[in-house]
Image (cartoon, rainbow, N blue to C red; front, side):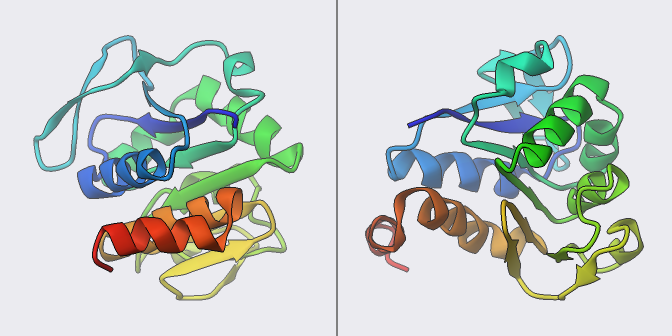
Amino acid sequence: MKKSYVFLAEGFEEIEALAVVDILRRAGMPVETVSVTAENVVAGAHGVPVVADSCIGDESLYVDAEWLVLPGGMPGMTNLAACRTLCNALKAHAEAGKHTAAICASPSVLGKLGLLAGRKATCYPGFEANLTEASVTGERCTIDGNITTANGPSSAVIFALSLVEQSMGEKVAQEVAAGMLL
C-alpha cells in the first residue's frame, strides 16, 4: 500500500491530525507526518508540540501517495495555504484523481485552489464562503469522488475511519472502530 501524508503547519488542530495518523496506523496504512516548514517540531493550535516525521520536500515526493491530508485549525489552515509546494502537490494529486482529504477550516485550502468546484464538501461553520463553487453539505463528513472533507474536531474519528474504509474496505474500518470501542 502506498504511503499517506498528513501535513502539519503551525497552529494545526491537534486532534484532527493525530486522530488521522493514529487510525490509519491502526488499520495498517503507512502514514507520515510532514512539517510544511524546515522545522520538524510543529506547535498545534493549543500549544502541543508535535515532532513531524519529515519536512516538506519537492512536490514530486508526494506523487505516489495514497492520501494527502490537511488537518484544520487556525492559523494552521492559513499556514497550509501559504505553502506553495503543498498547494502544487495538492493540485497535481487531486487532478490525477488521487485521494485528497481536509477537515475543519482546511477544506478552504482546497476551495481556494479550485479543487472543490462542482463538488459536494463540508467544513467548519463560518468557512463555507471559502469552498469556492462547491455545494456545501453541512455534514460531518462528505465524500465526493476522490475528495473527502469533514467539519471539525468532533468528526476527526469519523473522518479518519472514512479514509480507512475508502482505502481498505468497510470490514477493516469496522474492525478498527471496534478495537477503539466505537
